Length: 216
Image (cartoon, rainbow, N blue to C red; front, side, top):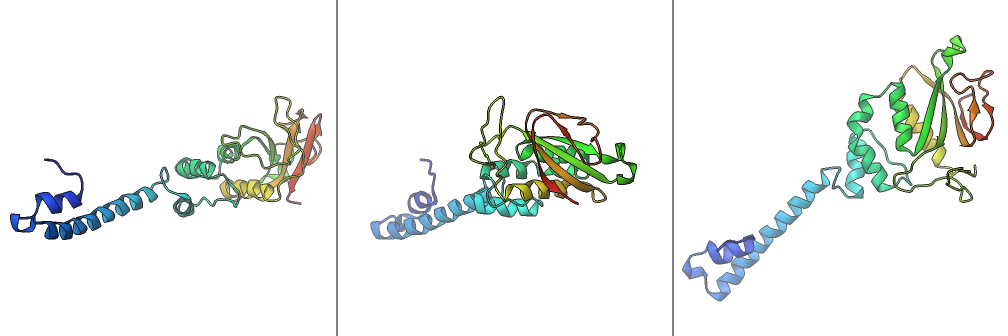
């Protein structure tokens, strides 16, 4: 007869006949049950070591080990995706692709403009333009009066924690020598001259835009 627990093994299979009587068996069952509890806790501890199965507290620790901090209001599943993708995240650190990738994980579609193309003396600076993207986990951090639709309109009464979340994520992944000059949000419509900023830091707009970060 097969057994599946230490409680069964120690009380029915392992002991000699002298310990098969009721009272000794109860004692053996208690010893086996204790080992079963240890196994359960061991398996649970092992699950907490993997980002795929870790609970909230353990995932925060794993993320910190991988250099990815969780913001105070970030959805747990969204953070789990970032932690699981940490290797790809850091292999792209210091690149334009890395900046664009981290912005997409936050739920925005980015355009990165390098200012040296029009203003050589600003060789290390870049501007980021954000548009509404796909929030994989339904997280919406902007104003309650914002409406997500094909012709999306946003309120610009932002959650105060959202702007530093965006800016810090960009600064974490950008090249050390580079400088984030500004972040614009385009809520609706389009902008002109997106590949090359028109007139210093200015953006020619035909839609609803907002400057949410300015290094100057």
